[in-house]
Amino acid sequence: MSYIVEIENLTKDYEVGFWKKKKVRALDGLNLKVESNQIFGFLGGNGAGKTTTIKILMSLIFPTEGGAKILGEDITDVKMHASIGYCPENPYFYDYLTARELMNYFGELFGLDSAERKRRTEELLTKVGLDEKDWNKQLRKFSKGMQQRVGLAQSLINDPKIVFLDEPMSGLDPIGRREIRELIAELREQGKTVFMSTHILSDIEALCDNVAILRKGKLAATGKLDDLLTRGGERQIFEINVKGVSKERLQTLIADVPTAEIYAKPNGANIHVQDESDIEAVLRIIKPSGGKLVSIQPVKQSLEELFAKETG
Ligand SMILES: Nc1ncnc2c1ncn2[C@@H]1O[C@H](COP(=O)(O)OP(=O)(O)OP(=O)(O)O)[C@@H](O)[C@H]1O
Ligand SMILES: [Mg+2]
Image (tube, rainbow, N blue to C red; front, side, top):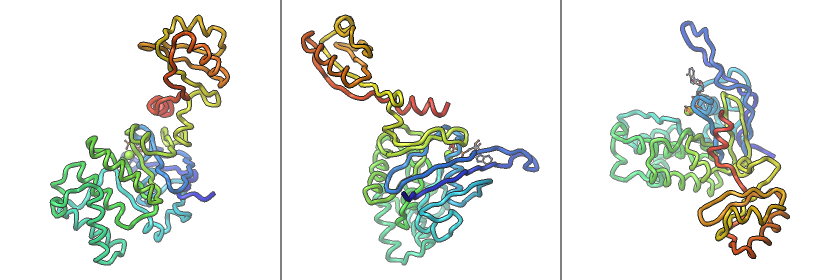
């Protein structure tokens, strides 16, 4: 199995205060592996160490201990950085450049010829939903959302295999978020890998295949989002949603189904069972009692519950 990102024992102490005597441990022995061609969600509360990790991966700051590889190359390898993209947390650009000039500038850094720079600039600015009339406006006149879009376009100028997005949805309104979400999903369709940090749990649920949750610089949980959200670990719970029959009536009817728990709902009830054989036992009882089956599904905890649990 080859990984597109491999982080090993990554530790970072910031030196703060007068004489830089005090140390703040932002990352503490972080290990993480990311497979390619997916959207990987990098989660954690404020100050958990997400931006620090991404900055180290981008070689903008240096680790105190440990290291990482991207595309199989050490993060100190300069050539590898030409194949990756990065959009910082608060993209800050030369205020007096226009969107077009900024894209052209980054295109030059990556060694694209002028025709290619023009083509990719126009394609990407269109794709991130920036109006053509704004392409020649100075960036200082851009709203937060527009800056975020230019940042995203800039991170894609070199057609990277993997792109690191630090809070790509911040500052966007709901429509803007949906557009950027679609764009990120499209990147995966094109076979790219997206490594993104975000606080917006609905975006993670909509987009991410796998996630890692950081807590105080350490890995609190990682894995497939679906698996992490399955409640009760190995003990799967199923929810049977019925209507037309009350909780009280069900309670007497299914008293002998050992794992069943019943929760009242308007016009019906939810029955939780742990065994698949118990599902059938419940179904046999519902019909004759006048109840109607609405749905059966495995119970998942919400991402919010998971996040609260893992981030403390
Ligand atoms: N340049 C710095 N100097 C000193 N301490 C820093 C510096 N940058 C970050 N820190 C500290 O390191 C820890 C991790 O910060 P980091 O910015 O990586 O967190 P984050 O997960 O990105 O948070 P957020 O969700 O708020 O963006 C925090 O305690 C922060 O105060
Ligand atoms: Mg951050």
